[in-house]
Image (cartoon, rainbow, N blue to C red):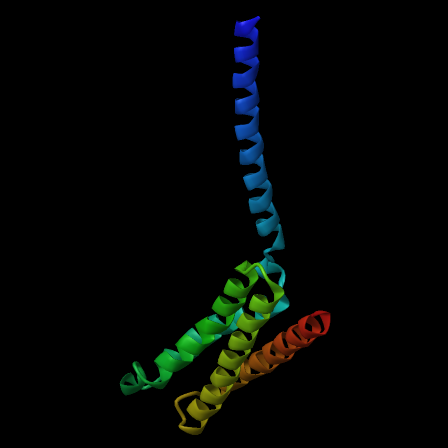
Length: 153
C-alpha cells in the first residue's frame, strides 16, 4: 500500500511538471499567434521590390557618391521593409504601428532622396520613372495600413 501511494505521488509530481511545461508552451504559441506574417502585407511586397530598384539605380551614381547619397538611399530603402518585418514580430498593435510609422518616415526620406538624385542628374529619367511610381504606391498602401490600424485601436 505504501509503495503504491509513493508511486502515485511521484506520478502526480511528474504530471504537475508536465502541466507547467504545457502552460509555458501555450503562452509561447499565443505569442507566436499574435505575430503577423509580413509576407502577406502588400506594403512589404512593394517596399521589398523598391530595395532592388534602388540598388540597381544607384549603381550608376558617380564614384564620389558611393558613400554619400547612394548609401543614404540604400539605407533608407532597406529600412522600410526591415521596419515592417520588425513591427510584425512585435506582440502588440501599438508596437506594430510604431514600426510602421518609422517605415513610412524612411519611405518619405527615400522619396526626397530620389528626387534630389534626379535634380543632381545622378539618376537617369528612365530610372527615376521606374522607381518613383513604386514609391508613391508604397506610400499610399503603407499610409492606408496605418490609418486602418489606428481606427482599430
